[in-house]
Amino acid sequence: MSTAETQLLELLKDRSFKRGTFRLASGDVSDYYIDGKMTQVFSEAAHLIGETLYERTKDLAFDAIGGLEVGAVPLTTAAVISYHLHGRKMEGFWVRDKTKAHGTQKLIEGNLKPGSRVIILDDVITRGSSSVKAIEGVRQIGCEVVLVVALVDRLQGAEELFRTHGIENFQPVFTIRDFGVV
Image 1: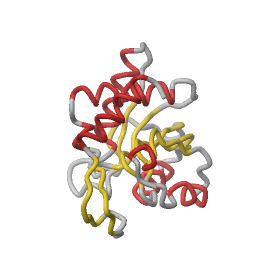
Image 2: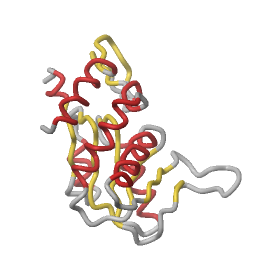
Image 3: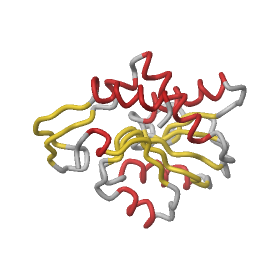
Image 4: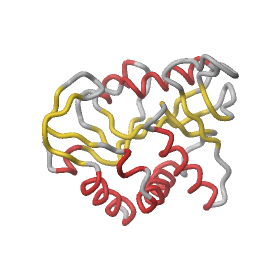
């Protein structure tokens, strides 16, 4: 684990990890919760997230990085800033949960071009259904998903779901085991 990842994990544990009874976006009830946004929008963590995502993706051939709103917006921003600081231009995007009803009526925000090779980001993955919405959104305009990256995988079936959708390359930065939950 890199120094940035070690520091990021400590921030996630301190700022985002909670014990109790929680209903998840998947509908499941859990005795712990990871509120990724509590860490993602903190200055120190945003920098660490960007560097971590850069290090994990820099050697791949891809054109854009993003994911489903709202969770992927700060991740995308952190990643594209890190790419810029390392001298590489990178497009960011996010997929709306549903097509915007006003203005340009877009499903995807950002300058994502049809045919692009993309990386899908997510903060905390349980079953992976939010990431699948993003995958389906970019595929609608002819993009190829080369990797899905999650900050935390709750190890409840996301990798298997991705395989059923033709995604073989899934890489969590951390799993729930890193938080002491098995």
